[in-house]
Length: 332
View 1 (spheres, rainbow, N blue to C red):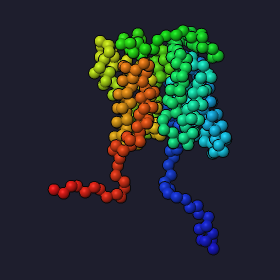
View 2: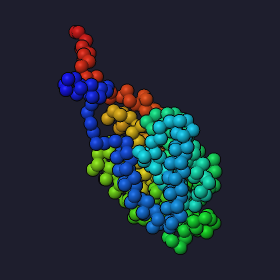
View 3: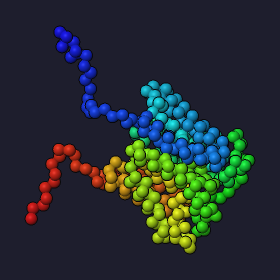
View 4: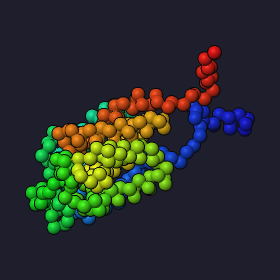
């Protein structure tokens, strides 16, 4: 009887039964940790306004996901930090002068229309943060108002008129001119731009952390950044090839996009060869948009376009199923 009682207390569930400490929550937590150096740097370069925009964006994303789940009577999973990551990334690709109402609308579009309407985390077709940014360009002036770095030039917490405007390096390069800022300033982040994209150094620190934690691999970022570097070197618009290449790599949102957005699990290929082709495609599109597009930056739209190609790219390098017979070679 004791054995029979023990048998009935067993919990029977479908496979797989392998337990792993890695979960969506731990992965998103590591991504937030990796983004922390860039967030600290944004406060140093742009002042408290950058922090406030980021906090408002995170709060809005969490609220919209919670409200959707309550409205649709679904299990709420805001504890997995995925909404927080979307909020931080969306704030990072906006200028620090962006009005709060604008980024809240971007959060609404990213969470409700791009993520939750398609079934929630793991089912979205494109990156929610980048889609939210594309939507926010319905207000191009607000999304293209850059400020000089330094606390003396920062925008106030409740107004956007106090900042001193300045052109970004990509704005100069889009006209075929070398940027006014030095390569060192661009590498460190001492330039105008979006909240979290200016400092290549701080983003690379986050990249190393993600590699050590094995959250991502280096295939997509290296293929992406490498393609941009090679094309910029082969087809420079300035006189100095090396300087032009370095400016294209360190300027704009290339580092942020390649490390934190193009590597999104849901919207990137799963096969190794597919990831390399995906990264190369992002790099080619980025250069084409930067050189021939009407907008200075091409990272966001390049990744969004390649997100739509992931279904096809997953067929490249697809391994043979376990136990499946191998194709017989053609007989002579």
